[in-house]
Length: 343
Image (cartoon, rainbow, N blue to C red):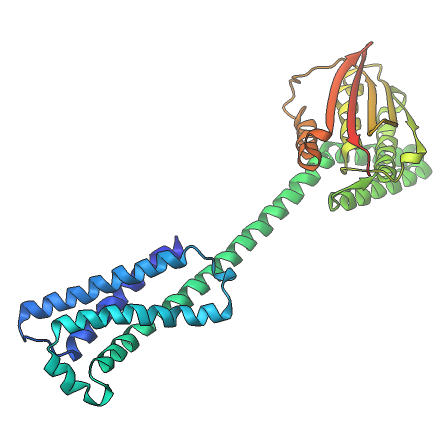
């Protein structure tokens, strides 16, 4: 849009100027007012029309795809072609005698052609400079906008990875623990620091090893254990041979957070969480079982954000080769992630 408005402004100003110069220095066949007007508007309209066709042809090619030689040759060729058209136009309005008198030393009509070409060449040079500089500015603006979007996405992604409420609750739990058991409080602070460090690192990665995912999950549950005490019990059953297999970051922790928030937290007596990681044929299975009732449409608007985000990331990374299933089995909510094994 910016180049479009600049382009039409350039067209009007430059061709009004060129038409005025042409009218002043060309000797027409008849020195009448109407012939001068006809010549002026012929130059003006012919200039806008031919150069706009030139622009439409160039629009098929982006400036970054053009070589340096093309950048130099394009205005030269354009000047020759359009200059020849103006030569034909001038030939209609100028008598042969005046052409021969004025351009005798240049080879008569060839001199007129050279004059027409040099008059319009600045337009082509200026057009290419404006086009290229506008394109570069648009690219810089796009990059700047993308950088801002990435920053916003990074912050939003981190917010979804570690719920702010969890951080506040964890800090309050540790604060209370300092009065009861200072040694355990120090350990909890270390665990929270490690959790934040690891979550930030995973947020910058496209993939994470199961070893990293399990470490993050254990740190998370250890901190939640301080808050829920005997209301939260958890157990890991992990096939150690899969520790180097890679999955998308924060996938396991999303299931565990969901189990704590919508399972354990809602039950007065608390409950159990069982985390199983194993292989089944060509798939890696991350299974999280928790005490509770499965509600496919939670009343809390935040209920589905983490899982919805996880499904989108699964689709982005794996297409239909990975999936998330959630169901209720024997009084427990079972969340299962299926990942294709690394080849």
